[in-house]
Image 1 (cartoon, one colour):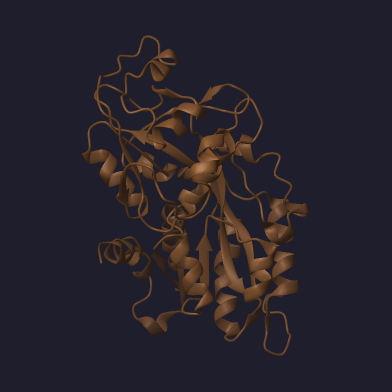
Image 2: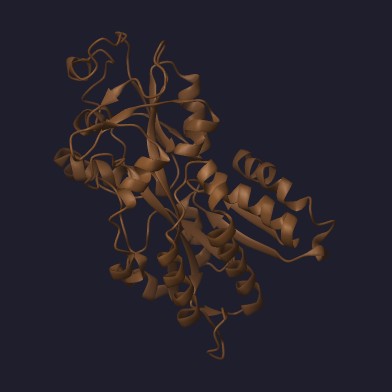
Length: 347
């Protein structure tokens, strides 16, 4: 119930431009919490311009995939891209709408944002339960001059099926053989240790409350909640901060043109400044639309976001999709999303 109320509160502003349900169309979506802050900004601005309202439930990528498969929403949203075979099985298509970063955040007395350094191996070992104290010699070796407390580490993770978890565990699987063997990569995993919070907001709340905690959230949540993000050692061996520029550096080499079904994973990318836990958030829709007019309203919203929502996205440190990729996506809409008679929904 709290998650539903949270969603309703954030998107209430998006309804103010329409005096009643007849003042404009209503489009319904559900899924990832990773892009939730920017979808909220987009929804509010789009409603002011058009009167169209967005009802989006921030319930996690797993929930979004379930709801679109059940046809209870007009679109689903997932940070874990579906593989082409699964898309074909259910008659779905997907596209990347926005890119951003997942960031580890800590609650340690005297430690400010981007002061604590963590290597990939140490981050994995913390989540494996192998490093249990903040002054462990392996952490201290990377943080000379930083006063680390002799304090238990409280691990916080997602309790729900989550694309943010998928991105995070995808990264850990790439950098830790033990993690890959024992835990793996999924929207929901059997966590070796820790407390579970629902949604990015639930993880953020736990970390804020528990001294000695570490969690992972989408970057906008870290900013909005004034949380202490960490510096991570990237694939090139450099400790880097989570910033829009560093998310862009990670995404720079993404070859979307050759990604079948737009299946692309941006974790642990090369580059001196690349943030290692970068990911895209995807929209899921049916190829054959039972309600083409409503589907067209969904596409109008996301088209507006591509062309007019860049500054709003950048203000929250998300990375907009490159123009050439946007054109590619719009062409895919024309070729793929059709009504029951085979006519293109997007023209």
